[in-house]
Image 1: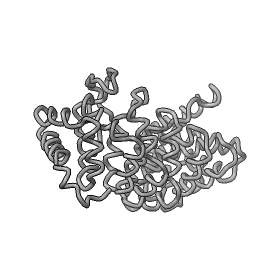
Image 2 (image 1 turned 45 degrees about the vertical axis):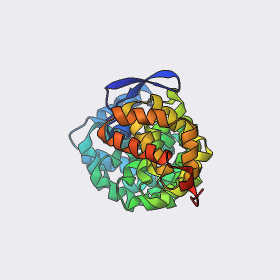
Image 3 (image 1 turned 180 degrees about the vertical axis):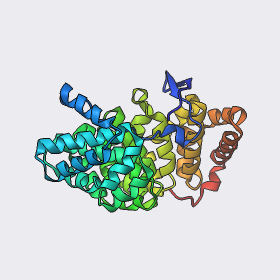
Image 4 (image 1 turned 30 degrees about the vertical axis):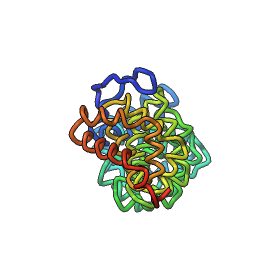
Length: 347
């Protein structure tokens, strides 16, 4: 879960109450379950909650719901999907039971339904089931990745958020990351990061951070134009996405293509501004990113120096954490290298 303690700091000339970050696990909280909103009616809600809280004969209830998914009318399928998502949401022990009884396959097949509300309920049910570690293999082996990518592309805003969340859950299994990337999820997640609401941006960044631990997915993210929304989010304090964007950027800049994209999107002034006025944690991330940019590129070193990075880096080398001090000192030395040492350096 995200931490509740906050540090006040000034960034881009404004005071900002920022989440205290000690590592990436604090910046990226797990996607939540069940975002399908309100149920269709009070009577349906009452019935669904009654079923969700049932402790007796639950196997028979689930079998009937699976049967309705497979052979019922659209209305019966919607009601069954709604009830399954509630069973999976409210009682963690039901998640494994629902999968064992055979609900996963029928749910996945209904992702392609033209009925958008049914698709939303089905995707949310799969998300809730994916919260059980044992279910991830069942969901993946049942062929969920491509249908979830389809939902990420074509669903309602809630469907897209929950599809992103479900893909994140599946990406926690290392071997799924490549398959998800090759199924076309990365450009869609980048689009969600750029154009979605706060919850969508948060879910997209979380999924992208997990997926981009694989090099080929990093390349896909950069080629999909991820640097533009990342830079925009790092200067948009209202987005509450500065920390997540910074962690994701730090992950991506190991690629030469990503470093060029940072510069092309005017990322250097943003990073220098964070070193001047950001929180302790964000300063450390910004220094690490700039150090990666500058290590083997004289042109970037001159750009960073011209942006006025040396004074705040010197201050940070005296007042930061031991890790930040070391990085700041190393970066200052690079920026102060004689111009003659730049001969032959790669642009």
